[in-house]
Image (cartoon, rainbow, N blue to C red; front, side, top):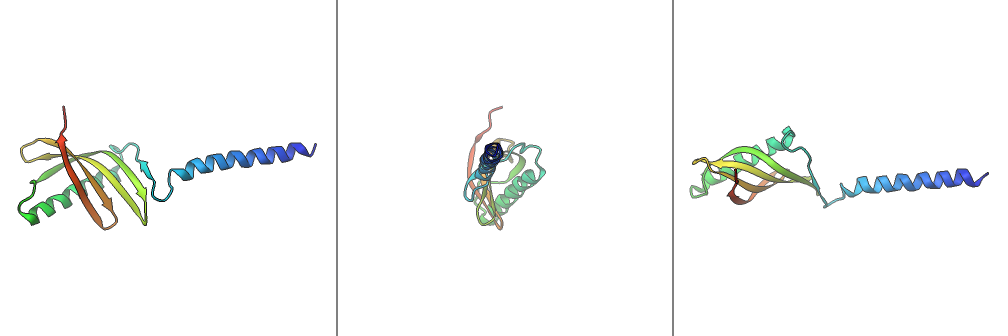
Length: 123
């Protein structure tokens, strides 16, 4: 009779540890996590717009950059837990001529970095 409560307790602990390890593994320090529904996530869309604005300011200051970009939307995003949260964004933007392009951006607490302009998005 005493074996049943011990077995139930042990089994419950194992199940709890299994689910807890799955939850923690997605937020482990340094691991990237895909952000779902980025098109509906207003915070992520605002980060994308901010990244494009920062890129435009940098290009204006250089006076020899790739030119002005107009933010369209963030199409994919990941977050990474470091000393804060770092975001990796795939942003769709258009040039003055109306060409739509994809580019990658990294956004940290006080720093935005545009990694590279991508190719034109196929329609």
